[in-house]
Image (cartoon, protein in one colour):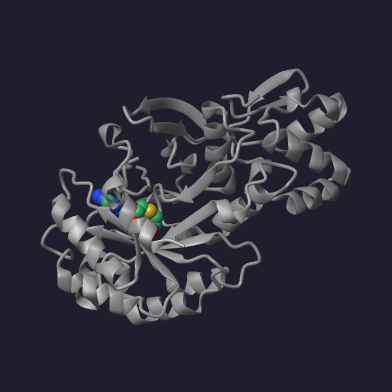
Length: 380
Ligand code: SAH
């Protein structure tokens, strides 16, 4: 099963911890690339497939335990490569069942990932970067600034560790790229991760079970639109005028609303599917009936659904969460005009695992019960 060590490389009689970063990390590669790499060093392709299955199907990253490889191949792989895996350092459990995992990477940096149970699905919220460069005005992760991109080994590694820890390795689960970081700012690593996750020889998580949330990096969204492997798309909108969005979501100054909405309009959304527009509600800032009506107009001809996120307030965040009546009124206005709407129920707030709270941070989705009827009326 999954082991909490990075991996071991054996050189003659010496055992060297393979946290040394010089060796190529096999967990950074999708299966075709792994096969190619093996071939290039004279190892048969089927060995690559065996290794891939060990890592992702069996959750084993220690080459010396990959029993069907044989000692010679094991030694050869250990000499040339390493297999990176985040190490579980700490976990917190919320009263609502949410679990937040603090993971340590090979170089000592730390990231957080969150398990959100029963929404009604089982969901893993994972990070794509350490910190974030987007600097949204209400997000704690944004306040910590950008440290670095995660590698595919580190992105998929979060899923492997969480699947193991929650006992869901062989179960169906959803993945949301809504932890720390802007996934489209780390495009190639995220796409490689999606291919690794989807591979039938491994975890076999189909793209329809993955949701990628972006702040609206327009050129990267256009590139994503041409990918063969397409996750569900969520867009962090949060405002209905450029003036307002420039302040809340600074990247809007580069890719303003018109360009963003136009890209969404053209995005190849699958039949019966929609783009989720996340909208954080900030008391007295973007939560008025006029905001709601503008939102309706803005999304008028987009295959959209709106997920309202009442702010998770925190020290250092210069905004407040609106009261429930305001949230309800906002949701009702959208619904009345035919927009599909849900309100994200904050999960894991007691362990700082809720949206925008991962400092090293996480988040969550579900409809509030009071809105159940409303939503039922607006869902297919
Ligand atoms: N960078 C991506 C992924 C982050 S997902 C993106 O921006 O979409 C996390 C979601 O939680 C985003 O919609 C983000 O704007 C929102 N969020 C951030 N801080 C929050 C807070 N304090 N309260 C509620 N939602 C927040």
